[in-house]
Image (cartoon, rainbow, N blue to C red; front, side):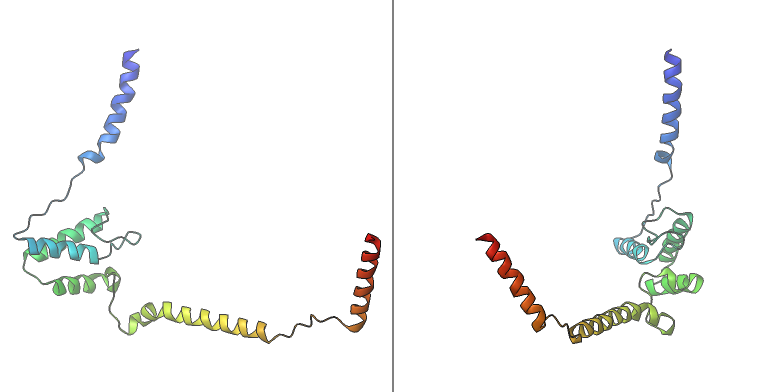
Length: 159
């Protein structure tokens, strides 16, 4: 009886204990400035296989490789610009969260403003059209007489 209960518990512990033993990346830096640079770069660079995560947030293998590569370049004494240029040359501007303004990214930068302008233009056109429409809510003379007659009949019925 005890063995039947113990076996599933041991299996469950083994299954759940796997992530706890996963390797945790720990990089050692010569100074605090390099460590800060590493964290800034890791936050600014996009994981290429994840859904909108930085390489600092992602646990994907590619993100781990990119973090290691950034660490090694910092240890080699490369500047932030050199590191970013290397990664852009290798993976394209998509690796940046804030790509530069250049002909290939004009639509990316101007797109939201263009969509907003189109939306406002449509709103103005629709409002002006509705304001310009004449609504003939006035009653004709014949309708007014019928209404007065119906109201007087109702009042006579109350008395």
